Image (cartoon, rainbow, N blue to C red):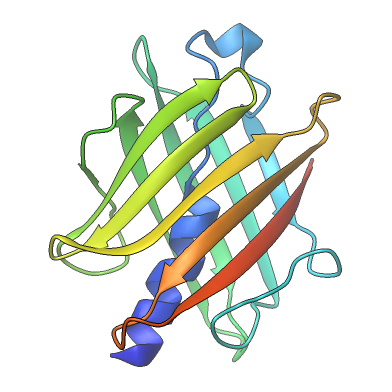
Length: 158
């Protein structure tokens, strides 16, 4: 269970960062690669690599796809399609009953809440740099014990 929650938290961090409502102005649309040297606080061993791709979805949403090679060398991934309305949307590929809710704060910042079976497992925010080349996701990962860990993931635009 602990490994499952850690995997969910890691992927949720990668999956989460809504941007602008208009795709042509969205600084996050495209492909991002995790910068392991600048990232910290993983709840388990860090992955060997992670790539996140964002596409516009509908008038006010996004589709997010993640591919990762975990610390053991196994391929994993997931994704979601969500609107930026704070409602829960299913996360596919990580197991049953996983949802994410995203809300846009401003053009470069968003907040998110991830749940497993209705229980909050992570809360955080993502910020795209002014030059659009880096985004940083700060995530409060809540363990089953109630303890939490702060994870900071830094991604470079590809």
